[in-house]
Image 1: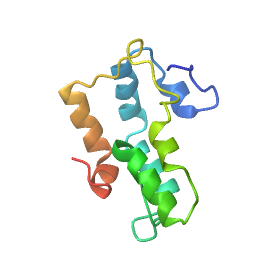
Image 2: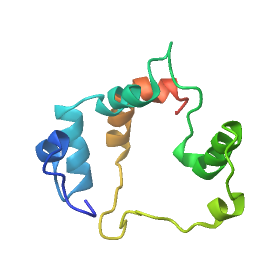
Image 3: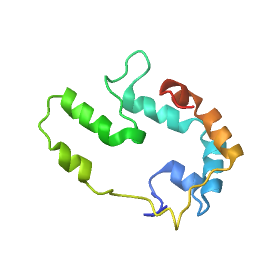
Image 4: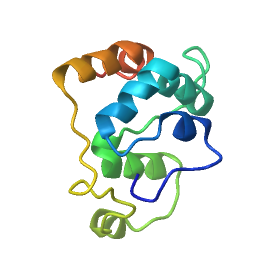
Length: 119
């Protein structure tokens, strides 16, 4: 929402809303499980996935681990001190879930939740 809706994106066009909860509700109704399905395109199926999957919750540490594992030269201190980029405007576009909506998202996306150990 911060940068507008993608006119080429089917999900954006079908579900766009200035209200976060309405947007999520429309995604759940029109594209249930789409996030889990799209992840498989990036990480592979469970029996043939890529070797390392970093998580947003510890993105910096996982990036450093991936670069070290790949034998890449990099400046660890630079990575640790880079300011955030492409950050959502949460004051203008709050992304708050009700307890019920959160439960519905978890149910619809249970494949990703289970596979990547989210509760």
